[in-house]
Image (spheres, rainbow, N blue to C red):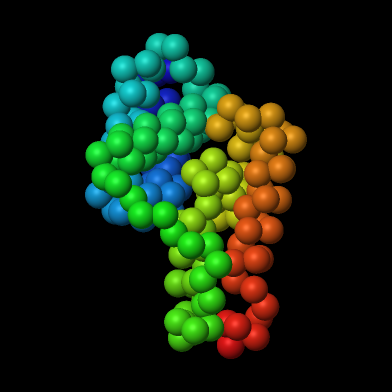
Length: 161
């Protein structure tokens, strides 16, 4: 990979990488750190990375960095378990986006990652498999399971209206 290829990778993928990280982490500072860390690692490994596969390499690196960060955070902070059976209508929420974000936040990390890559970033199953290191079939299963969870969490459209 040349310096021009590296600069092109920054121009082409930095925004998408930031959106992916932000959606997974929900924290702008952490998302910026992930993006910066990915490009730092890309610079260090520029001689080993094929310029045609830089997109997959960046998203794979971001995915692994987020998982590592979350694991460290879980070791430091005790998180109270959340109940999945909350009744949204009793809480009086009317913002569909807020309800959807809360539901996505409760997904296991791998399901959350593949769902966001598919539905928010528009990647194919094959590309998601390359990024996460999963097979295409595993990606489809995780997306299916996450969508079923979201459907059960949100319930009927009457609850949202």
